[in-house]
Image (tube, rainbow, N blue to C red; front, side, top):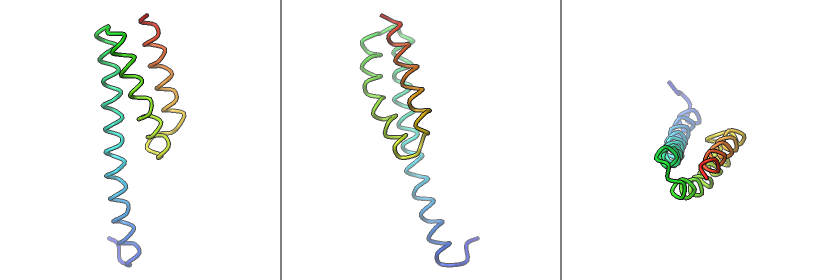
Length: 87
């Protein structure tokens, strides 16, 4: 358990940051799921729109350190290739 005031403050900061990151991670997963569902249903226009909405969310997650930038880039690239293949 934290003893010093600075350690107690650090625990509070970590808890707040964890909550924010958890929220961001959940938000990104939701956007990714929407793209996956549109691809699975065979709806190309819906998949393209969902991908267009998901890209900024992935970039934001990478920018804030929730995901590594290469991971976000790889996800976008692979989803874009799958959407393009539907055409």
